[in-house]
Image (cartoon, rainbow, N blue to C red):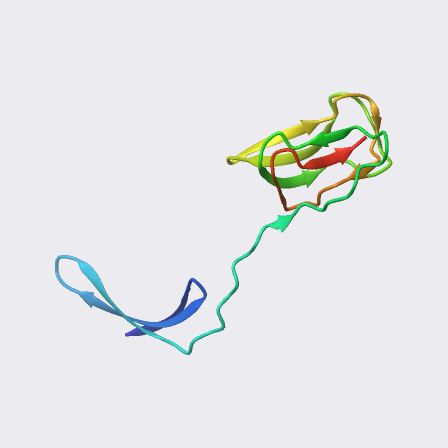
Length: 126
């Protein structure tokens, strides 16, 4: 008989496994009993978009679909060319590149990595 500790959904269980050998095959019998209860783990809540007002006269690039910001490829004050990747937005298990619509300078980044955004939320201002 062998004992193992396993974790399932944050709960620890002590498991005893007995190996039974027969002439035809090998079978295992598993019994389990919960061990001391552990503190429940709070589910991870997606981060919200950081709401920063766009500077006066700035061109705001908005989310075309709801999703999660996977990566931010630029920084504030950086000069970008038209078509350059600004950030990566994951939507429906697909990574979407958000591109600069024109040449310009990034005046503000309105989201953080890992943030959840809705359609129309401002992402970057140029």
